[in-house]
Image (cartoon, rainbow, N blue to C red; front, side, top):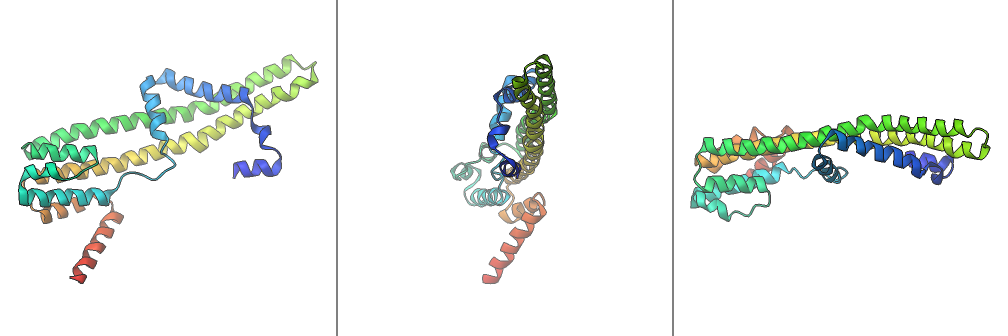
Length: 247
């Protein structure tokens, strides 16, 4: 809508200014590199590339894989978990721990360590994104001050007033757009996805612990239902009832 309103009111090229972009974009990410290690900032940029897509956290798929693992372990023993095809590295780790003979408390402890490490990385990405949102408008204001100084220095040259004023105004515009369109919503979305991933990892941890206790698939299924979001739980229960009616 912003782009549409710009085009309706004039030319898109009017809002493209290389010096303004250099000040705001360069200054914003320079501040992030000062505030955080380079690896954290680059990792945040990498993780934010998928923000406009759908979340990869699939509770139903995870639930089905865990039940499949419970059925395999029930018939072929814990070693049978090694034959279950799993793409998710965390689920694969959980199955491997059970197959290696770790007891339930040990499985929970080891998976908890992995969960905390994953959440810490996600928390760092959220903090980096929040810092970008914080400094982007400030760099827009710095650009505005630079543009005003350039304009005041060359008041005797009318031809320079326009470009200098463009730098002064567009830097504020760029900073506000970057903060409110990208960084603030991006931080919220990263935090939301981290929360969903945490629920999924708790789900896997509890499922793996149940497998280590050699619980039957029905017990595992009932136990895992409580860890899933209400909408997903309702969907699974509806499918279960529909399947029971068909039988």
